[in-house]
Image (cartoon, rainbow, N blue to C red; front, side, top):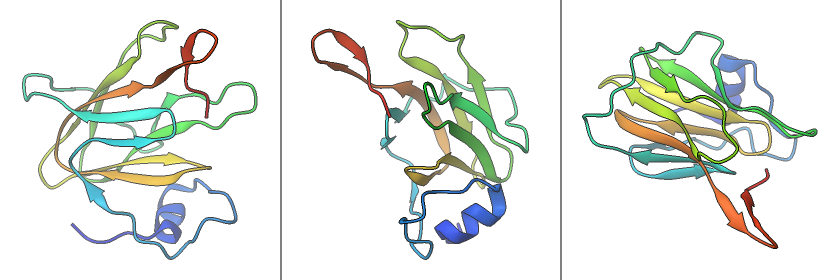
Length: 139
């Protein structure tokens, strides 16, 4: 796959990132597990295949809450599919992501910039932490 810089991803998606983030950094293409703030992308078996096409404007996988920022899933190139789970305060799984061979998914967030996801099937999930009580990780 071609390389992509933060500057190019901003131009392609229209999603701005914080000013201090280096615009010339190349975003690696990853097919293994990755995290972006409170969102995890974890490889899953081929039997878990998403069938809902990600629209050109993307899909909010986690909406910013109380002034937070939204994690948006987009298709960088080729078709990308995401079957989103119903919102839940207890289920950490946000949905199933399928990136066909030759396609690339892009996960965008203003504070974390961009992550690129290569071909495969993935579970997209939130993290939780134990503080005084078990709770969702806050971005």
